[in-house]
Image (cartoon, rainbow, N blue to C red):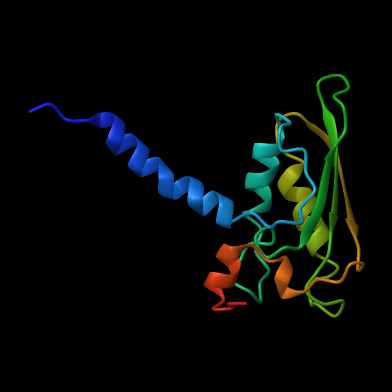
Length: 138
């Protein structure tokens, strides 16, 4: 009996793409077609708020990522982000965590992280996966 590998491959990749869509906060401004974006995206998803068991990207703390045009093989990266509250205990440390996650990536020259409070963070900024992990259904 001949096995249909096309159906198997399609079925196994479909849930992953649905998850990927659900893991994307709608408000993030980023150059998704830039070759560095997948590496930066993955690095941001490895940083967790110590008080909340969700990564900072899906939590909606990243507002924008700008990648400058390449100079001498390297691109500078600028991240604009916020915190769940100005009184967050890791407010002083979080920008350093973001910088440390992105700076070692191949192709990255420098990293700047700007903390912004406008617009203020609220739960609507979270990806659907984050809302599910935290049992926050809106």
